[in-house]
Length: 459
Ligand code: FDA
Image (tube, rainbow, N blue to C red; front, side, top):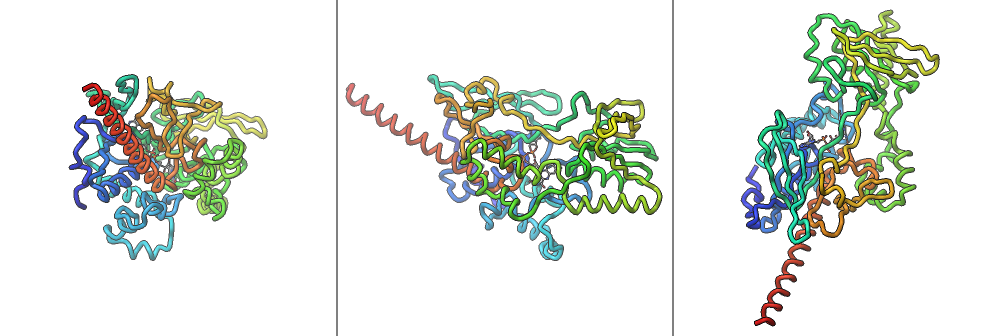
């Protein structure tokens, strides 16, 4: 692919970038594409952008790239199609370049495997390798003040591996796309044999025993069900205990009317709605995304359970209505302490490993924003106020833009941390950057005219 016009775009003489993206997951990758496409269309108006990513190379939930696991979103909701189906970064173009277009069509599915979609993401990310500081963690954002106004910020990064080599890059805008943080049950610490699902495939190779007795998986969502299936298949000697407080796995509502909650237009509807309606919508449609499992996977697990019964070797144990009360690290594994919520019975599950499929939690960007945090406006519940263009609303003296990709469920709805609207959201952020730059230029030009007039009058 040809060189991006952005790479040769002159800076405005001040060494300040238009945008630095923090994190280079699918969200900021989609933004990199949207900006690249703008830069090609309008080279004279090119935006100078860079990204920092703490991983050593692009990776999308690598620890959960389980064999056969499929996407929960249509391939048509790739990084570009919903904004511009003619983009050269569509999943279909990727398939064509990989020589699999006809083969994929014959599969007759909208849901590729995660392994394949990861490869698609990597194919896109390769295009921007020169724009991404891999292996660098953003640790601090410092406001840059001139004449009482904050027109830019310094993004301080260090080597993710050892915290060495601090570097500072200045930008007029930042976009925080750092994703979610794994959530562990209270009082539980991860360790050699206690893993969050995020680390499943990274940790597994550390198991050195030939035979395995038992794995305990805690949780009832998609990742939990996938982990159960994966462990059952991978360790034929082991018993797999699925521990959750529900009575059974519940199916994800992916029916067409409910699915419209993931449409770009739903973001407009949600944004404009009063707080009470926002809350109701999130409650009504939580079962499209949270603590639910793909229907086919539920059926497959149930078949496995039944087949075990037929064979008389019950390797899959569903410990429903059961809560994890603690985890102890043992010399050769981990002990899951559980309580049956119906009977009150408490017991321990000696395990080769305890896998915590206990979800993720939102990270407040103010942790990173440091001295800029008090300039961010908040609502009555202390949550960030975010403009429709995904920019945090700030006090008047802040001209630098702080955009969010994720962490905006309370303002923009359920797609905030998902893939569904990345293509459109990236276009919106790109448009906002351009609009605000034009506004600043006009402002500066007007101020310049005024200076000239004042100068002429003084002469
Ligand atoms: P993501 O977490 O992917 O990326 C954030 C990046 O920021 C990471 O690469 C991280 O290393 C980096 N980072 C964090 N802090 C940093 C710092 N201080 N400095 C530098 N870099 C930093 N959604 C969906 O719509 N359909 C689906 O099929 C799935 N499937 C799915 C499977 C699994 C196993 C999980 C865990 C999640 C999903 N999701 C999903 C939801 C998921 O959140 C979504 O797919 C994307 O990961 C969101 O992309 P982001 O770029 O926002 O975050």
